[in-house]
Image 1 (tube, helix red, strand yellow):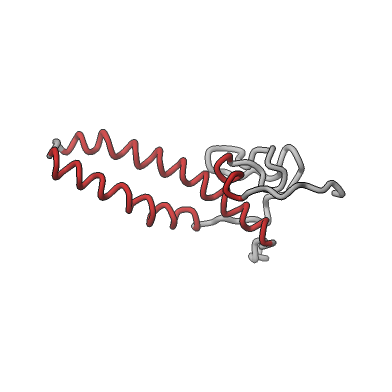
Image 2 (cartoon, one colour):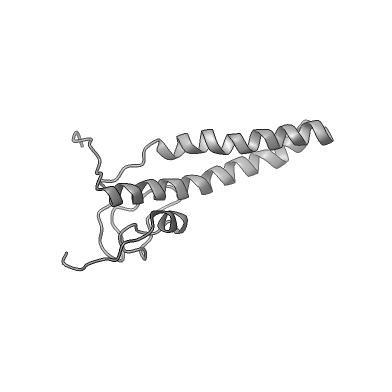
Length: 123
């Protein structure tokens, strides 16, 4: 492809879950499934692989935010256990999915930016 694409911010494309090369196409074909190619510029996403990187950042970072909030709620208000479940289950699930999409898109954008492709040649 001879068309030149302006550099895209990996943070901006990650937040928008957009193609890291053109910034216009969608990165995902489903909730968390990366598309095969960009519908706008045709970039093949198969060499880029976020694997467990996003999950690691979410487990470490997001739990560092949620656990103190849950403890604060418990020790300041002492609600029944079902209230914790009513509050924290949707917060954790929805927040983790949203963060997973964003962080996975950011990792893929970073891989494109620095020229890293999947090193697994067994496929």
